[in-house]
Length: 220
Image 1: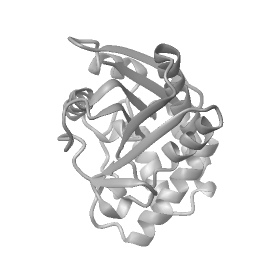
Image 2 (image 1 turned 180 degrees about the horizontal axis):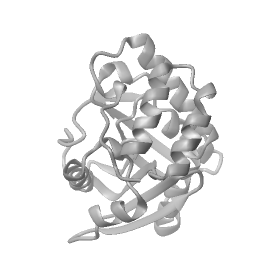
Image 3 (image 1 turned 60 degrees about the vertical axis):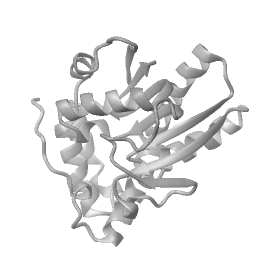
Image 4 (image 1 turned 45 degrees about the horizontal axis):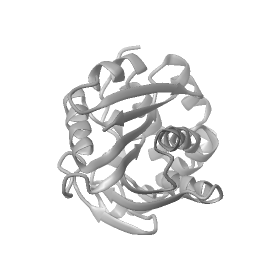
């Protein structure tokens, strides 16, 4: 199945605020039930095993409602791990999560070098074309001091079939349209590995997760 770059409704400025909120709630449920949170926890566990630390500053890029980092933070707190989270999104209307939030461009992060230990994103990488994905990775590596954590979809015909099967779980028509578009424009693990190949100053670790998710760690 070839990659098709279909514009998503939430990426536009024309989606009504009520539909933005409804779609973000749908995404929250999908992330809780179908591998989104567990993929991010698997990414953090790799960082914990390598560093042995128990507290990190995290910039969550394209944060939206912040469902994934918030849920992850609560679960990690039960294990004595603390995440100090800052949320960044291009649109103030998308930032419905709590905590410190900033409107900014993911391709030109408004922070100094090494400002955060970790940079994370969930369901964002597939929104970027190959050149923009490379630019985001370079910016995220600049702003982090330890690692960049990317949680995203894997493009596969069976994944597309699962999205259609899950339409009854999506209360917003925006979610249904964007869900199909997201799978069509997602990358495969092999494509992601080629685009984010290890280079000067960083290593790359990519692993598949269940229900057609992938985790990517760019080690600083």
